[in-house]
Length: 193
Image 1: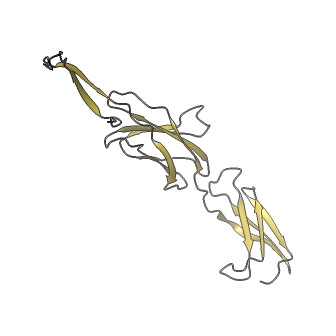
Image 2: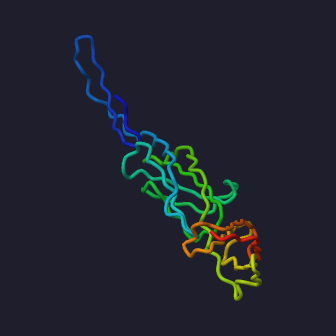
């Protein structure tokens, strides 16, 4: 029968002669089977400054140790690592609206590690923009110019600006996307919804 991953097994051997008489056993010692590689899963609990990398244990028994790592440059360097017996690792104090890559490997009882399993990438969330001192810098009969602050979001953050004449924003009268971190946006020809 098959052996289970990352389990310590003890071995002994004895000989049998032609008359089916057995010798005494020789104790061969013990060793642990290799750990099975963990399997990729999803990211969870992603916030503006933290994320949880999640994987499945690959059939390894409870107590198997995993090393999870994250990087923000495709693993040219490791930003943070976590040694855990859980099938997840939490990474804190991350940058707002930034992409992170994750990987994990398992370690057996003899400290032999598997190859890394790529867990993919995800981005931390963007902060909601904050109001400017003067949100509306121009209001005309059929257009408006508005502005907001980045509120900690880095350059390259996409902002979606919507206009509606209903507080519930259904329907949307006009919509626009911009990469500006402190922006002015002019809406023209705003139609009644």
